[in-house]
Length: 171
Image (cartoon, rainbow, N blue to C red):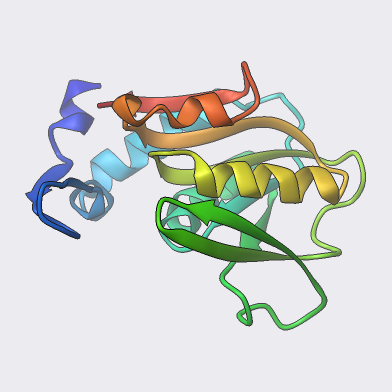
């Protein structure tokens, strides 16, 4: 996994001073590395009858869509308010300084459908915890929340369903 970790670029002081941002665009742009990352994550779910991959705006779209393709599953978008054209279910959640809201189509997941929720990086877990609540409210069965990478020092895993978190890479 070190070869994949080493492709991810550190950007100091982004988006604000004191933060070292993990820039995954370098991995996404390298075709062999991107394929390897998708294959490694998808392999975990082969044979688990995944119906949908729920993806979180925006970088989660890239990873989740590739996973869904590999698994023969549908893709369900979770977006900022006002971006989805049909009836939505909304969830407002707390951030460190304020709040944010996400939406999902109310008919995107049928009761009992087996889903994975995919995003690029697990940091504090706030966004993913909100998405977990949304999927459960629609009746989806969460197989796992999966991430390309996890920033372990931020403790986001603690906010998600125990035993249902997978991260390919950890920092």
